Length: 114
Image 1 (cartoon, rainbow, N blue to C red):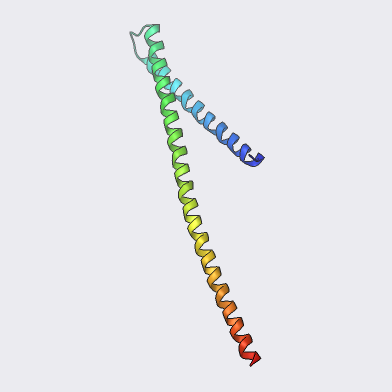
Image 2 (image 1 turned 135 degrees about the vertical axis):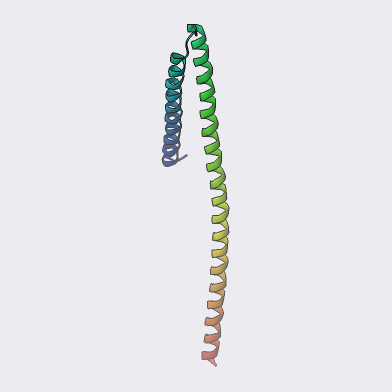
């Protein structure tokens, strides 16, 4: 793998990590606020709620990240198909134009040589 692709992949990994960290930090704040407002919870119950909520939010963050990555892959595949069709059409057009030009040149050369 060349350095450019590896750097892009590394930046993507860092971006995903930071997104998940920010999401989990926000989730941690929300669950702290929730457990602080809820009266009558023991420390163990608060810990259980926090653990469950943070695990759930980590799962959601992974799902969202995976969904976005899958959608990007899908869009790239569609783009490759469109680009391939465009290139094929361009190549066919160039071949037809080249053939027409060669035919015209041969016709003109034959007409001049008579």
